[in-house]
Image 1 (cartoon, rainbow, N blue to C red):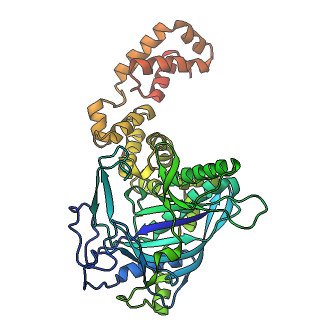
Image 2 (cartoon, rainbow, N blue to C red; image 1 turned 90 degrees about the vertical axis):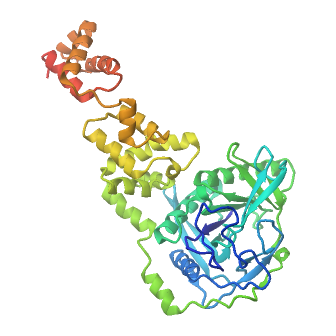
Image 3 (cartoon, rainbow, N blue to C red; image 1 turned 60 degrees about the vertical axis):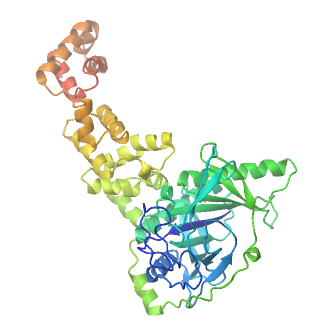
Length: 481
């Protein structure tokens, strides 16, 4: 298995021109002669893009090249207006690194082949088909606003030895890499927005054979969950083909979120098919050693170190921390704590109710329509007694449904806990009168029967009573306690 991860850098302008990288502009409005590749237009390297590449390389324990240059990668794609991509080929800015990831308590060292600078392509929209893909479409529309945005491509060396856990290793690596990129501040790395995407290269070989099998490349997988599913699906597909006596074709493949399967894209080219040659319009890049060391000294607390610190602060075990990492919840939990929620409550909501919603909707946690500040507010409402857990879950559902913030949802749905003593006492009296036999058991010392009366009160108040206070009133009424 080999993984290629593309990361869009969060620079203000594109890699080789001054066009803005801001989202939301009209199609093809954020272009110029340089990023459209018009004759006579000369590119200039974005210094912040180079800095971002060096930061990533250092954080990945890579060697930083003393001298490197760009190359032209020639091929025809309609979403590449120049008909070549300005990239790096045999002279990357960073190389020979590694990133350690943990799966089921075991640490896997993923070796990094290279991290190189390049530019992103434009965006194709296929119109008229049922799937949104080019097959069956009537026509395609091209938006070049994204063409030229700085990309760092991070390529692993072959990852061997993971066996059946290869899909988990793939997900863990991309998750760890995303945490690293975000910690460096060079990109938001939002996979659902295409700011970070992964190509999964896979091949199978018989036990005991050294030579790798023919590989496939599943392109542009854009969520942690999908990275794992795509790897598992492709392993199963190739195994089935080989067991039936067939052979694997070297090709690119598309991953389908709805079915969790891959389908054929195009026959995969080899490097020589791209006809790489040095970019004649750009000078080489030679990062000064003093500058590189300054950037190394400025590296932030790296994710593994940070997780160990947070684990101690939160008082959780290795398994819980790993689960939070796998769910992409660490930053969300931290932000919720920063917004005022206790650590245990922040973890409870993100890893419980909100993780369930994310799983059911097939989205990442940070793609849910709720913010850490809103989760902290739900926690505060529970702490002050305005909500119980059941009502809090309904509030969260309302926020996710776009009904407003927690306080608005409480108001609109009338979800506040019934705290009026008169109303609670009346509900308790009714429950005792309706369940005389249960009341007698409680008077006789069978405290386990209290739950039945509490349940009756909760039903009568539509779950809006404070269960703790209801229990106190029941025991007072029955002269127990």
